Structure formats: structure tokens, C-alpha cells
Length: 148
Image (spheres, rainbow, N blue to C red):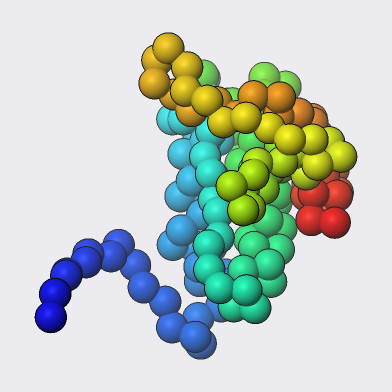
């Protein structure tokens, strides 16, 4: 019998809430992207059909939308030089799906996309449309459109 060991940064119990998952998995990514330390972050769910991915991600998306714009406002109000503010930052949303060996743009009529690597070794999803969101409502409207 083969044995393998794994290390985890965090594990969750079925009684944990979406807020618990957000706090430990996604909120640090939002802070990373908005506080000027990064720029892009990805959160994705993987698992068996019917396991609650869509339910969990819907809640996380709402928290992300609220936090992005709240942090941008905090940066502007705090007057911290060099940090992103609503005036200096464009928030964009793109939404794609990987399913059955296929990649498609969920905000652009399920247009088929290609995943390539550029000269710097960075992964690029070619043809993926980005849409600007100026507030949490617009952000969530775009996400809702992608979920249809």
C-alpha cells in the first residue's frame, strides 16, 4: 500500500461559514491586490458537482466586491501616498470557465479562448474580455452575468 503525506495551510469543517472561508482564503488576496502589493489575484473552486462551490463562491464574490471598493476608499481617505485609490485604479472583471478541456469567456457569449504562455513564462488567456466595474454593484452585476 502506498502512503502519501500532505501539508495544508488551513482546513475547514462543514460547520464553517462562507465568511470563515473568505477570511482565511480570499480576503488576504484582496488586501494583496488593493494595498499596492500585487495587482492580480485568483480565487477558484474545484470539486464534485453538488458540493456547494457555487453557493460558497457567490458569497465570497459579494465580500470581494465590498472589500475591494472599501479598501480603495480607505486608501483615498487615509492619504497614504502611492496606494491605489478609486481615482488611480481601474477595477476590471473577467470571467472564464475551464470545463472538459475547453476554456470559454463567460462574459462574451462563451467565446472560446486559448491559454498560452508568454515570453516571460506567464500564463495568458488570449481573447478574454475585461469589463470595468466602478462600484460593488457593477462588479456583482458582471459576476452575475458570468454565472448565467
